[in-house]
Length: 216
Ligand code: DX5
Ligand code: ZN
Image (cartoon, rainbow, N blue to C red; front, side, top):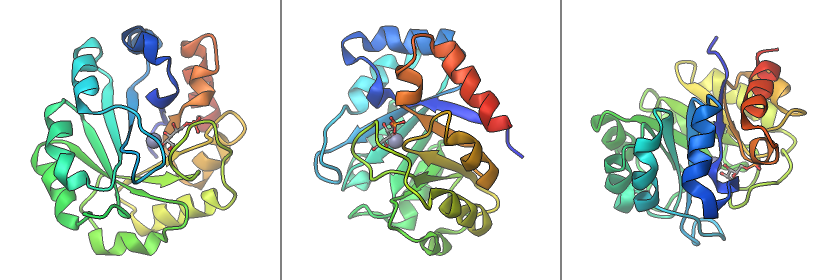
């Protein structure tokens, strides 16, 4: 059993105060910060890229987790590895996804994550068995924060945990006080939380409450 990790999704922070938000999360004890990278092509939205992440890297010791919602992760991967990310997650649905992409991440000394969209079956993990450290189950269609947790996500988490028993199972989208306990019970231990952290005044109590609810 892995202790639950709450990773605030920086897509939902106040971009006008980005450095302050990182500092507040550091002070709140956040163990990981989740950076949603969107290219306006793989998903219908744009966010930020490796230069922004690199400039914020030194402000905290928290794990920097880059979630690459981009069509060509292979083309841009090195920038995220150089930016100081500790975990880089790529989608199996990306145009240039290949098992070797995960090896490139690990070869850089970075944890390799693989992400599955809601409609992608967990059987896709068979071809990359043993080559990733974390599987992130999307519990919304990627592109925007603030969506509702999709039904069937807990079954997907359980199937992922069964398919990849050595990997950490994460969940991303609509994770909040009312959905996190069941996701945890299904086998997730890494929780990406956007609205459920940034919608609260006090990030420390948000992170602690979510972790406590996940731990049961
Ligand atoms: C969605 C992103 C998520 C999102 C989570 O495409 O991958 O990380 O920002 O936000 P909430 O927790 O509000 O669903
Ligand atoms: Zn994400």
